[in-house]
Amino acid sequence: MASKEQQLNDLLKPVVEALGYGFWGLEYISQGKNSVLRVFIDKEEGITVDDCAVVSRQISGVMDVEDPITSEYNLEVSSPGLDCPIFTLEQFQQFVGGLVEVKLRYAYEGRRKFKGQLVGIEDGEDIVVHVDNHEYLLPIDAIDKANLIYQETKGK
Image (tube, rainbow, N blue to C red; front, side, top):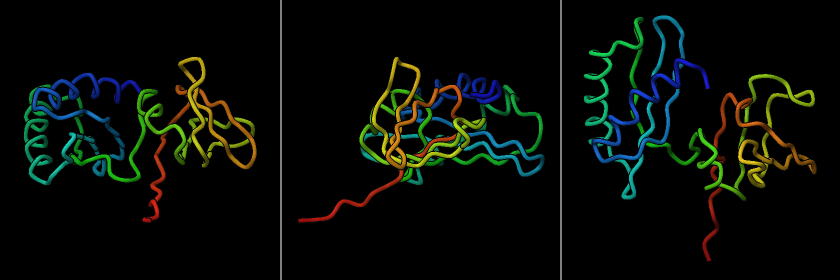
């Protein structure tokens, strides 16, 4: 994870948790005046628009005081959603058996993008993804972005 994202995680996780929400993770996309800070929150009952507004106001206040991003940016607060981003090994562990899409920071065995079944966690630092009849061992530190691929379950 980039140092700016780690700094923002360290700053904002306690703020979100103090409000009674789970801090799922964040994305910081630096693009000049179009930069975006996207914070994902969760709670057992689900997230409402009002929840997002409460957290957004609190984060805005902290960001104004601490000023970790000196350029313009847009703050977005939301639930992780159905195709939720995956940030930590613990989150990957929750979705073992599911479909995931993983993008690496650099090419591994000639590719950067992997889309397949999450088989498991290896040695506490790698994920195992089954893609096209092949299992790939991907280091968590090499992952740029990962998402769960939502699959609708058929009714009876």
